[in-house]
Length: 105
Image (cartoon, rainbow, N blue to C red; front, side):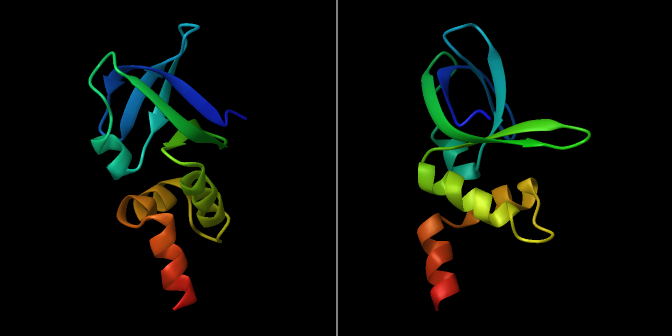
């Protein structure tokens, strides 16, 4: 599993970016909205904690600015009927601390 990636931003996409590592391999990384806003311009350096989701029809790499967000994503996708895209949408609206407060209240 790819748990962390850093490199240069080659392209920005609607849902993330293509990140090129020092070895010259480019990875498409899907990001929550707040991470998209913090992306540097093309050629800038970026680093993300990641989670790779493998399904029958796709292999997708999801990136997060913090380890806590990555761990929260894993908890969310572990909930019945919550897929990776839904978990990303939730993390685009709420930070991990906000979600913990909601559950505890």
